[in-house]
Image (cartoon, rainbow over all chains, first blue to last red; front, side):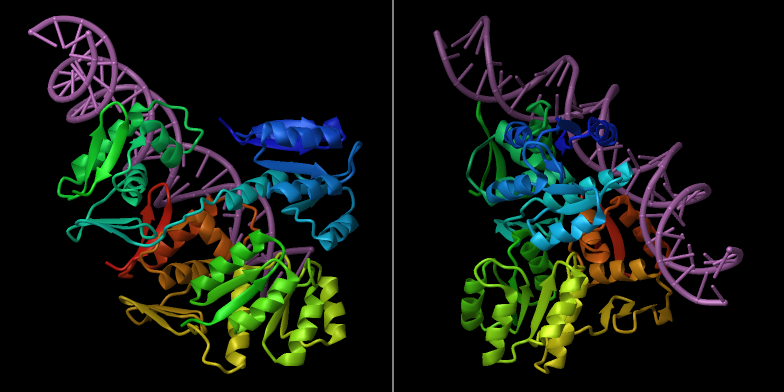
Amino acid sequence: MPETILVVDDEQRIIDLARMYIENEGFAVASSTDGREALQKILNDKPALVVLDLMLPGMDGLEICRRVRTQSDLPIIMLTARSDDIDKIVGLELGADDYLTKPFNPRELVARIKAILRRSERKAAPEAKPLTLGNLLINPEQRLVQVDGVTVDLRMKEFDLLLMLAENPGIVFSRERLLDVVWGYNFAGETRTVDVHVAHLRHKLRQMSPQVETVWGVGYKLVVD
Amino acid sequence: MPETILVVDDEQRIIDLARMYIENEGFAVASSTDGREALQKILNDKPALVVLDLMLPGMDGLEICRRVRTQSDLPIIMLTARSDDIDKIVGLELGADDYLTKPFNPRELVARIKAILRRSERKAAPEAKPLTLGNLLINPEQRLVQVDGVTVDLRMKEFDLLLMLAENPGIVFSRERLLDVVWGYNFAGETRTVDVHVAHLRHKLRQMSPQVETVWGVGYKLVVD
DNA sequence: AAGACTGTGTAAAGTTTCGGTAAATTGTAT
DNA sequence: ATACAATTTACCGAAACTTTACACAGTCTT
């Protein structure tokens, strides 16, 4: 399921233009021509980012920006008609993430959307410290795995899966839970996928002292013995 | 024990960003989003330097700066949203040591922090000392790179990229992270840009013993073997 | 012990990512 | 303004990885 970008502008023409380019990049687009309605949609559609015109009927962009900011740090790109306005907005420091003057280049808009999402999507990596479990060593920031000092090559999903299990030894995770965490909450595929990666892990980590155990009918856990 | 830099800004996003790069240079980071709290922390945490946003809730940056100055000559770098403001501040002569306009380049911020600390004569943290890794030599001050004593011509981005990787050998960096550090956090472009520069590096540094490795689906790292 | 259900292993199909080349764009110096 | 250098974008084919499919093996229930 693609991420949604909410575009708020009183000119339908602008919305259509933006929609064309944004959808072309694989995002979904929601839109509104009215300030109040926009606030509603922010709550309902849970957009990943809002493109917000300064001048709006209902409630102006500044006010919306301010209100959103009291609630969340949802990324906002402000559109203004005159470049003077940018100084004004920036001066107010109400926490928009970027600014663009009309007429804007749609490609530029898309580039900035991507840049901001790239930044804000950075997964909070809580534990970056190396981790030892029996003869297993995991260094998250190097994405390095060793068993008895011997480096084992793991692929991305294998590593993420092992890390998840190893950070919580003994804890049972359902396949659904593992999909949520390792694959992302919007993963649409089969839970069986997890099984395959567990199989790969077991195969590559034969010599590992903590073992990936199956909890029948429930999921998997890592046991340290 | 590392020196502490106190970062004061009302936007948590900015703080997080600054923290990432400053800590990466071996400093500790304290932070505050509120003016009054900041004054407290200056007393408690005894920072070596303060990065201070002009606009703040609680008490604005100018006032804090003024108060600190009555007590000590703790180095201060002021952040402002508009370049106009700098003239204003400088006019007030309240003795900040440097100024930076938002959006700022995090590398630039770090560079100025180091410059000021160096100037203020305490033995500053990890200096821009030459760096050796296998048969690779990097001298950041001269922006000089040698492999087996043979100088290699690198372009600006190539050098910055290599330096980032070489300062943290073994650590995996996502393209996003590299864009943030080398290109600046408001770079609005493709992540693939990184790939091209990595390709150039590999081509120019065939003989280098540490190698730039691809971590599939994640990013790049420099491995020393 | 049979039947129903859950998990494993293997391989093929599908998808994404990456590296290289070249073209387009931007920046810099003449 | 023009030429040259550096950076960024575009695109394709290859490689790496992921997911699906399916037959078989194991486990639990009655």
